[in-house]
Amino acid sequence: MTDPGLNVTNLKYFYDAVDAESISESARRNFVTQSAVSQGIQKLERALSTPLISHQRNCFKVTPEGEAVFALTLQLLKILKEIETVTKEAKDVVSGQINVVCTQSVAMNLFCPVLQKFKQEYPQVTVKMKIGKMESISTMLKRGVMDFGVVVESEICDQFERSLIRRGFFNVYSAQGMHYSLHDGIYVDHCSGLYVERLLDSYRKQFQKELHILQELDSWQVLAKCAENGIGCCFLPDFLLAENHTMKQHTELLSIPYRIVAIHPRGGHLSRAAATFIDFLGNK
Image (cartoon, rainbow, N blue to C red; front, side):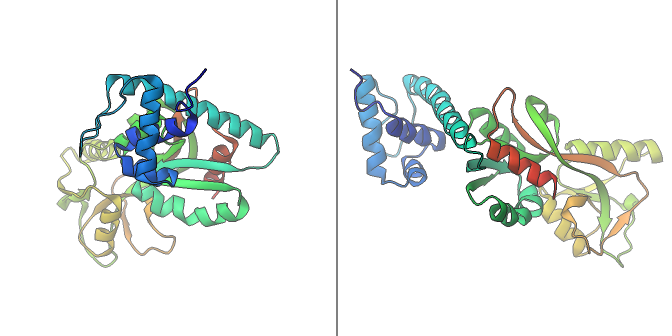
C-alpha cells in the first residue's frame, strides 16, 4: 500500500521549493504556511525513506536522491497539466493558466499593452508572467517552469520551437533637433549582441572603417530614454518607439531586421490557452 505521504500536494511543495531554492517561496506559490511546506516535504521523505533536502538552518541544498525525485516530479506535473488541459479543451472553452516569461522590453512594449484586452476576451484564462534575460528564459523553459517565452529572436532560440509574433527593424535614433553624427559613435545595449554585430559589419562594409561604440547600457529601455533625452545616437528596435514618437532615424545605414517570436521546448505540447495567447499577440 502506498504511503499517504507520497501524494501530489507534497510533491508540488517539494518541486517548488527546489525550483526556487526556498521553502518560503514554495509556501507563497501554494498559498500555505512555511510550516505546511516543511511538514509536507518531511512526510515525502518518510514515505520514500530517503532525505531529499538538507535540513540545516539557513542552508537549502538538494541531495542526489532529491535531484532525481525533482526530475521525475517535473514529468509528473507536466502530465497532470496535460490531462487537465485536455479535459478543459474538450468542453470547447479556452481556459486554464499559462506561464509566460519574456524580457523587460518585450513585457513593457508588447505584452502589457494587450494583456487587459486578452483578459476581457478570454476571462477564464489566467496569465502568469515572469521577467528575465535570455539565458534565464532558456533555463526556465528547459526546466519546464514556464510554458513559453516571448523574445526578440537570437541564437538561443535555435534550441526551441518558434512561432512568429511580429517583424521589425533595428535603427539608429537620436532626439529631434540634436545634431549628432553616426560617425561620432553610438550607444548600444551589448557590443556582442547579434544585431549590434550586424550593424558593425554593415558600417564596416559601407565606410571601410570601424563604428565607434561609446558605451554599453545593458537595456533597450534605458537606450530609448537616453535617445529621447538627447544623449546621442542609440541603436534600438522599432517596437520600443510609440507611433507618435519624435525621434530622428539615421538613414546612413540599412535597417537591421529582427523577429519577435514565442519559443517553447521542442516536442512539447502547448495548451489551447497558450496557443490562443500567442495568436492573440501576433494579431495585435
